[in-house]
Length: 244
Length: 247
Figure (cartoon, each protein chain N blue to C red):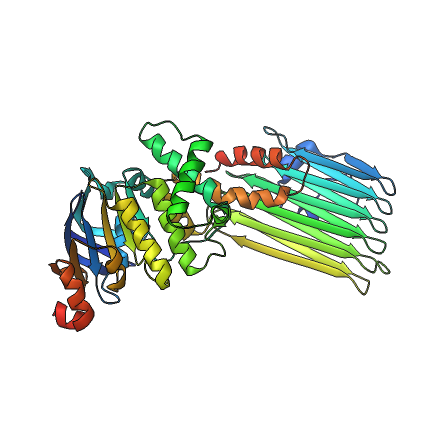
């Protein structure tokens, strides 16, 4: 794809994008991350709180390298994070993201994880909390090349709608050209359990506190095991205040 | 403490409570018994303010306040505790975290300072001890993986920690084995049998009443109280059945 031409809805990766906001930031320079063989790296990203934030991250993991990427996509405006990760033999990629939005906001996470060599592991956990007329999207492709046997790829994608007017799109995709691989994906869009909410309220928690308590655990799953896990969860809960 | 006057309530537009009246004073323990479908659980949920349980007539005064005008959490802060027949599982939320936040939300409603972590743990330990409930289980997510009996005992621990004025206990005896029934019964007495507190026990069976002696027993049928009496009424129901007694 010509990275200088503004994408259209016909581009699968931009089907749900906020194209008007994207146009103002286009073209987007990719952030390149290269992890040498056997090395480990980590990055935590919190989307810009006030302005539209569009990022493209290209990660290359050489043999035996590992990378831990966490994203909090919870600004006030359009937030889009696209990640392409290419995994060498025995490499390990962990991606955890939470996106929280309300109003007319569009939030997107688009990933492509390419298992090019045997025995690499990828884990993706994405949790979205959406209110108002917000749209939250996850498009995630796991590509397993011919010969990449022993691949272990996992996608766990869940969205919680605070109001029926919000929209969640979740599309995990597997493209497998090798035998003997393990690829799992789980995908769910739901609402907070009303009986659980009533139960918590009946013990004295105001509705917003009850919702926050129930969503805390949900969001925290995206940041489990991360070095900045607690700080990210706290920041996510602060963003959640604005939605409840 | 609680005055229910001619209460009418519907669930999904279906009338369930049809003119229920009941008065409970401080220091009293009342039992409501009745056949399946009489409206026992609806009474509990309506008093607790569960969404979908719509009051279409009558009034409820609790400790000088219009109970029906309050949100569920405000009812709790006013001193009402609803023991659930089926306590709800809340994945990922620990009992202790939830109860501390709930208690402090109630205290805030009264203009009181939040309880410190240490003071809260001390209180939780005391109440768990009373119900012979393992403190480690209180660190686990609310009711997740608990057996039926553990859930009911956890409810009573919650009640002990939150220290309500009035407890409405909806079939707290169901799902309990004989030993657990005794522990729960003794827990209810220890926590709630006080001059400034009251209990409304909703139950099918006499057996809980062997441990928690009621001052008054009422028979609920067709959405109304059809008969009231002393503890002997429960025994009469047990031997003769609802149909004979309520007719």
